[in-house]
Amino acid sequence: MTDRIATVHRYMDGFRHSDHGAVLACLTDDVVWRIHGLRVTKGKDEFDSEIENPAFEGSPELTVDRTIEADDVVVVTGTGAGRLRAAGAFRFAYSDLFTFREDLIAAVDSYVVPLQQ
Image (cartoon, rainbow, N blue to C red; front, side, top):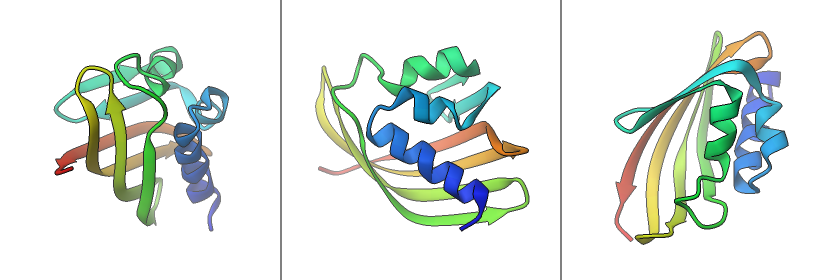
């Protein structure tokens, strides 16, 4: 496993446990997170507020099915589940593209597709 893939897996595990410090340690200060079709988050402070978004209950379940690395990018695909306070349980498939600057994640492009319960 390369260092960048290990960083992405630490990031994913941090989200699974709502561990702000673990997630933020993987990111550049000027990180950009694009959840395509939904929102753009810029910088560690905004990113931190999304680790435990108040619209959600608890931490997400995230399964990694595939990890691919090329140049300064690591792509992870998988499925997940969570719970929205207003709407209840939901499932989704995702593809996250992590762009690195040196050893830290500088950008995350997330593509999320809802799945049937």
